[in-house]
Amino acid sequence: MVRNRFSCYCILCTALALALAVLLLVAPTTAYAQGAKGPVSFMNDVAPILQKNCFACHDAKKKKGKLEMTTFETLRKGGSKDDPIAAGKSKESLLIDLLMSKGKERMPPLDAGDALKPEQIAIIAKWIDDGAKLDTGMDPKADLVRELRVRFVPPQPFVSYKFPALINALAFTPDGKRLVVGGNHELTVWDVQTGKIARRVFTRAERAHSMAFLPDGKLVVAGGRPGQEGDVRIYNIDVGTAKDFGGAPSVDGVSDKAVMLKELLQVEDSVLALGVSKDGKKVAAGGTDRMVRVFDVATGKMEHAVENHADWILGVAFTPDGKALVTASRDKTAKVWDLDAKESLLTFPDHQNIVNNVAMTPDGVFGLSAGEDGSIRIWQATDKAKAIGKATKSLPGHSKAVFRLASYSDMKNPMVASCSADMTVRLWNPVAGTPLKTLTGLTDWVYAVAISNDGVLVAGGAANGEVRIWKTADGVAVSNFNATPGYVALKVETPKK
Ligand code: HEC
Image (spheres, rainbow, N blue to C red):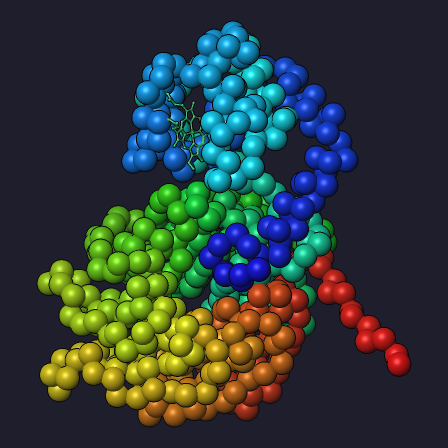
């Protein structure tokens, strides 16, 4: 199985799918009965099935068989044949015929996947027999993908996780006492010294991909639900009516306006990267739609929309003067964009492989980029010597892909931390281009890294939910815990010979 922090192949999702499959196997009659009982809603019951199994080929772009399903109106208009639905008569409907077909005309096509489950077909058939109506108040011309996104109600997180939650993002609270970790539809907050859970903040986003505290103590988080939606939201994690949830106080960051303060962005797929300007006034975000957008935090307004890469944006940072953005992309390059001139200043192509993240030296002279090739490269980012884009140094050490960089931008003691599939976190002096520390102890790919505001602590978060916090000065571990609420890692006993 390919492990990828952006797609849904994580242990958790696989396990969920398995659990669901088992449930359906154990109770096929109830699942069927539930599907077929009571009124069936097009929006709540039918459209999600079509979206998942059919829209890939029957959207406005592909329109296979000339049929577009992404609005109710176009679905009922039909394709090369007429309306595929005979209202009130599921047995005479082309749609049901094709779903049930044992021949090569079956939908989805044989080579595109399995047939729909009988209970899913039963739901659609019941809806047709009930008159094939659109939910009251819905515009038949409305884009169904958008409507489904608006209607999505995030599930409550697990009280106790049965499987470790992959960590994509970490941030120390400004006082350095707690660490915020991205969980499954929540942010979890942990005491740095004891490694105990302190708080749970429920979120609309299934995953947090990147986060940072603003100077006023609010937390900005980029994340989403793969292939469905993405958002950038600002939270106050210290307020809200806390309810006990598995022994930890939890607050509602989905709808409590005191907790979820502002939504800067909502798009149709995950937002993966986040950067905050040095003065904390601007936030830049990028993701699978290849756009980097810059927002004014105070007004929430979007000020720039930059399209400078040919593939996903995986990393973004402001230059110290806030005038330019450095970006990392799946298109194998790092780039610098001048925000005022609205032009690309340079492209750094040396990685020849996916570039996962970028950072800047505090003097604003050098850019750092890191990626799948396992290297961290330092290059001239500003035009002082007219040598911009030129590689000055490569920092060797990591033996596998480097996922993230975290900066401590202090001129006297500049530090960059990197984390890698080689299971280490490393500290570097980015100005001198020298290694400082190699931090070990994590036992899986380290996807996330963070440095505390005072530069004293560094934390790494791994694919198996493990977090380890070290002192940057001497590399001594402060604490070590699994940031998955309620999860107890199985101890694998080595059999005695
Ligand atoms: C991998 C692509 C693909 C997927 C996924 C897919 N279809 Fe199709 N569909 C096609 C193609 C290609 C045709 C045209 C077949 C032909 O004309 O022989 C078609 C034709 C149809 C038609 C007939 C349209 C007409 O008027 O001729 C219907 C109805 C249909 N699909 C329904 C569905 C449903 C429902 C799903 C989801 C359960 C689905 N399709 C998923 C590719 C797809």
